[in-house]
Structure formats: structure tokens, C-alpha cells
Length: 151
Image (tube, rainbow, N blue to C red; front, side):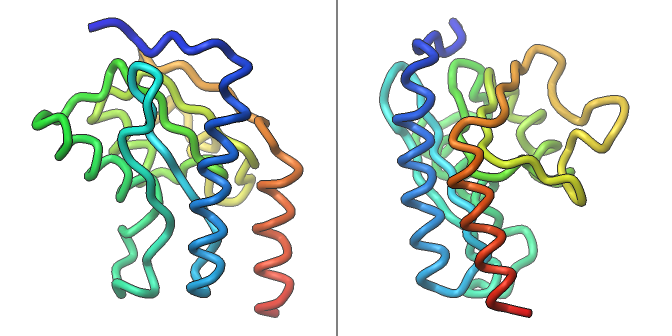
């Protein structure tokens, strides 16, 4: 299968969709992280953090989005797809993304405390391409404001 070959200018449009999902999480008093998976130019899944609502530490936006996308396709591999997520995936999500063989990951804000990039070797599939910093300011400020209000 071909990898998702969307023009880079579409990254902002799809990150805005992920940011809208993060706002849904914020409304539910969840850590505001949102994700969308895009395949062949269409959003195939939308998700946001639901760890508090589901009382499940694995209910991260990425995990929810993977489950929805693979269910839709009837298979476990997402090599033609791109994940757009507002925060750099954690180790758990990066490993799940590796198992799904996602073609590309685009994230907004870096996560210097829990992000996958802290791990060497990378937890991601070797063929996965990564783009970071898309709408970084908006994604980062949403997370920072959430935690500022919690403290």
C-alpha cells in the first residue's frame, strides 16, 4: 500500500481538526489532547483523551484513534495513514503506533517529560516518518493552561 502523500500545507488543516478534538477533552476536564487519523485525504477517525471518563490509563487520544481506524478498515495496519496529534505521543502510544505500522505521525507540541523521543532506539516503526511542531504554539498553550488551572 502507498503511504499517505498529502501536501504539507494540509498538515495545518488536519492539526486544526485534532485541536478541535483536544477542546472536547478540555470540556470534559480531560488532559486536552486530540488526534485524527487521515487516510487517502479523508479523516477516518477522531478522538480525544478519555482516561478520566473511562477510568482507563490507556484511553489516550492516539489509542482511541487507532482503535477506531483499524475497526473501520477491518485490519490492524495503518501504513497508508497519517496520525495528527496535538501532543508528542508517549511511549505507550508510540509502541501501539509502531504495531499499527502507521505511515506518518504529525504532532503539535513536544512532550519533554513523557514523549517517545526520550527513548533510544526509537519506539516507532522504522518506516514511520515524523513531523513535529505543527501549530505548536496553539497545542502547547492549551496543555499549559490546563495544568496551570489544575495547580
